Image: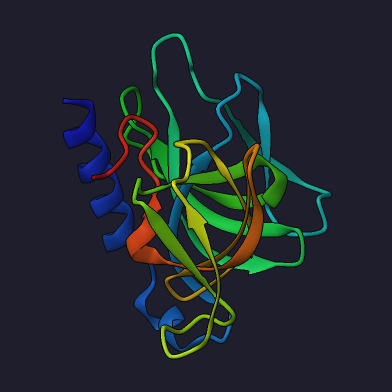
Length: 174
């Protein structure tokens, strides 16, 4: 049931995204979720951080997570549009510090990280046998994420194709 609600929420968010942004050089179309902590995170009206529009938080006890689409990244911030999976159908928009957002990787034997946001670019490294754990999002371009991945065996960074992005906090997306 939670998976169905997540899919419906992300579909609703997609419908509400302004299609005209697709020609914008900073346009993003990736998804993510808050770091798995029960901490109030501010959403700002702009990247100046002078005006907080609201706070979001994961309810780790009820497993009601805040998930979102990343629409733009600028320096250390991302403009997001999202909502809670279970408790609320209201869509919340705002700027969030990148240090609070994450995604998971699809569990595969090897995940390529590219040197640029295109499959035509060189593969600069592979994440071998990744753990199902949050990865750090650095920036976004169209449907590509620039990520940093660290586990006890490897530390890698590069452009991640959307097919390996698992922005579902409940499952490995396989």
